[in-house]
Amino acid sequence: MALGLGNTSGMALGTLLSRITGVVRDIALVAAIGTGVFSDTYSVANSLPNIIYILIAGGAINAVFIPALVRHMKEDLDNGKVFTDRLLTLVVTMLIAIVAIALSCTALIVHMYATNSWTGQDFHIAIVFALWCIPQILFYGIYTLESQILNARQVFKLPMFAPIANNLVVIISAIIFIALTHLTPTTQSVTSGQLTLLGAGTTFGVIVQAGILFPALRKSGYSFSLRFDFRNSGLGKLGDLAIWTIGFVFVNQISFLIIAKLTTYANVVAEQNAQVAVGFTSYQKGQLMMMLPHSIITVSIITALLPRLSDHSHSENLSAFGQELGIALRNVITYLIPCAAVLFFMGNQIGVILYGHGAASHDQGAAVGYIASMFAIGLPAFSIFYVLLRTYYAQENTKTPFMFNLGFNALHMGIGLTLFFTVSDKYKVPSLAVAYSIAYIVICWITWHRVTRRLPAVPVKQLVQLLTKVLVAVTVSGLLAWSLATHLFASKSTPDALKQIALFTVILAIGYVTLAKIMRITEVTSLVSQVTQRISSRD
Image (cartoon, rainbow, N blue to C red):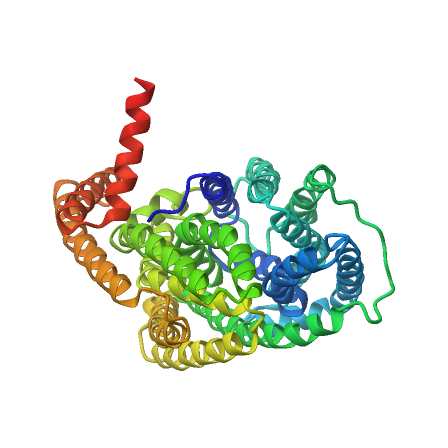
């Protein structure tokens, strides 16, 4: 029951290359600016465009646009052309206004997200970075709209490849920064030229990412025309749906604000006590490590699945709707949990390999990896929850996801604040990742029961059996692989970390495939069979 290797495999390849270059980008940035307070000024500033964009427009575009566009392409005589023109005009106009307002309030926004323990110079550097980065809001919006139009026209692959260009631009900027900087940069030592290089390079990458999709739009048969005749256009319903989605992301951003305040504070404390720098940048990079397998596997599956779910919902075919959801969940469970095991058992080692270089020390890299391990605990629940929520969006229900998300964030902040102010300084930032994982496990369990009751066609019993089998196979294989890898290569050096990761992955893969065969996990055995057949055909 594995998903086909057509669109999904192409998207997975694009996402894989995009994420690999994204990891290289993060490696280059950490090597350039480290994980100390200076890096937090850049990371906070570069997060602001995403925060503002997602808060005001991004969530609504992602969750509401595809279902509405699929409906208009089916119902409208022009295949949704006029509706799309109106929506694009409205959103781009809105984003330009948002950029202008955000630029005028930059200092206030930076102070909202950073700890009051920063010095005046720390805030100054963050504000300069933010002035460079905030225009990204417009280009993130354009890219998202382009991607959604292409997806609705069954063009899935190219949008997955576009971020690669963005990553390459930032990598080049970071390499030049490293070449021009001979000491670990601080907010006191960095020059205006270095600030311009990082700020402008980061924003230019987003511009390139958006620009390269214009030819693909024309090739797909769509050409944009400005239309300001919004009255009686059908956008009113879209606005009603977007209200709950905006509420969804607003709740997320309240949590993000608290996380940013806590983690930037933790880094100031670490600097004052001459401890390993662990703050907002470390938390962010650890979370991005967790997101890598989710983006490659889950997002690729859902990007291909969501238009089909919307179609089944529009046709009121709940049986097909539930069956499609069951297939997606089986694939996520089968392929994502082993990835989570690699990150959980080998987080420290991966962190050292990726981030223990340049302006960042070996210990700083290991600290990022440890945070990623804590995130990995909740990775399967996060991805399953992500899939389950898409069933509501496909049916143009945005209120219920808002309520689930409200519950998640209440749990995350309640557990996170309790742990943060209970544990020692060394574990403050990782404790927030632990809280994140616990909260997702709880809310995923609740959402699972709600969705499966609503969709009887979802094969609940078979999914629970599969989940149990996969957890057993991965746990047994993972413990064996971890014991052997850490015993045979016991030192903490970077070469041994690489050997541990390689040996662990090989043993885990062999153990998982073997146990999958014994326990009859068909997704694994069919994939192995496909790969074997392809290798044999080449011979």
